[in-house]
Image 1 (cartoon, each protein chain N blue to C red):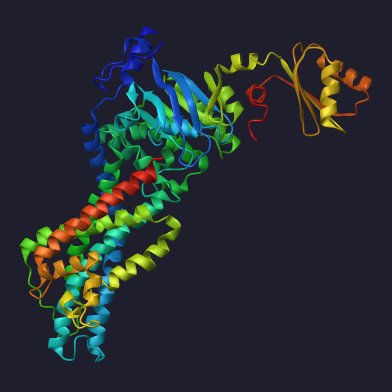
Image 2 (tube, rainbow over the protein chains, first blue to last red; image 1 turned 60 degrees about the vertical axis):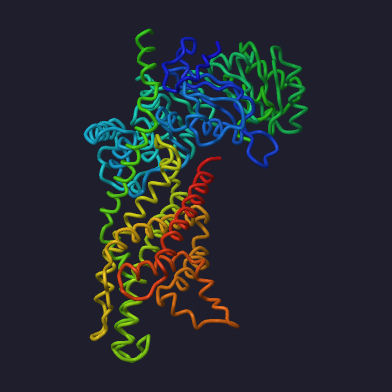
Length: 333
Length: 289
């Protein structure tokens, strides 16, 4: 499955065996000067054409650094990375032709209008004046920003600015659209609009790599998710397969007065099919296989043990559950 | 499946060589700057003219009127001062343009707007993004020189006349060189100072450069300032790039005394190379991690 290593020309057609991998990394590393631990530690990744790929992990997991290396802004300390078969360290200017980037901050050109932000992006990427004008008009229409065309970018709300940045990033039809924490700081409404938009782009064939610490985002959007922590890849699969890997079909959350650890131990012992458990603030969380009549069983067990239940809830395992099982901590710590 | 795969293979390859992509990117960046300049043309003109106008108004109009003329009393002495001041005003305008159009813009783009993060995604080497700023700053510097000179040479009290003598050979070579050097200075300053420290930059760099840069006096007039036979002020100001700019403007626009051109040209080339080298290095360091 190794990619062909022909170095004759970065412009050469893709090697036969690489097939449709648009992003490829091998033992990719980044250690910032003065940092004790590497930010990204021997990362092997492959992202295929046409998929939405998610890098999921808490803040500081190395997601943004990984995306930074793939987009040539962060210089790797070791290993290799390719986008569209172009080595990002050796040919950064060439790799940039293939990338569209939406960063965490608003990087729109404040001196230009909404329309001009798109138009000049086209010119920057070598499109002629007429084609840039045409595509700017089309994209403003598609992204529902047409009535803001002549407005200053200062007039846009956070969600609209984000949409404009996505429109700008895909303007030159990049091989990969990179989004770094795209919905951080967006209101729920704008988040949904953006999710829809990314889904539509993907349906048209756009390959997308996004970093996120929202497990719902990874779950909803991504074909495959790489879970990262401390710069390392902990798991990589489809969201469904990752959740199945937990081995439980239900997560039972109990709240009760008294010692949480004692509650966890008692309840985990009393119920059948418990595959994992942990204490949380004011209660316990149990992963259970076999959800049948779980609630009455749990209530009965609690009554029998003399536990004073305050609250009880059941949910399906989520990527959060997967992350907790892998790291012993919550995603949002 | 085979069809989509082919489509992706086409889309996922770079379409153009780096050189071709860089040329169009450079053109687009310059076009963008031209459009922005055109949007704020009056702002640009007023900003460029306000300082030269005030300098000429106070020194060449008000002072002679109130009998406080610099360079001695009488039209002849005041005219001699005007002859020194007018090229200096052009020089200082070129410097301020470099600082304003590059250092301040860059401080903002590196700072709260983070626009630079998008700009460096242009499909060209990173240094070219900084070099484009310098080119654009240089052109704006030339534009300011062109609008400042006529204004500076007419805002005078009656009887006061700057004795201008245009040396075109020097004008078309030295003014651009000065504009490049001062844009390089702008790049160096813009990439050296954190946005929050821009006030420090003005206080500790721009002001000393301005006041000790030969705007209000020519180099040879500093000879009497000495300590035990050492012309310490003349020695000190030689470290100031603006003195070469201003003396060069005197050579270009007047028949008065100035530093030798054999000194001015190579030193300005040296300063330009130094500023650009350090500025591009800083830019790269600020952008990449």
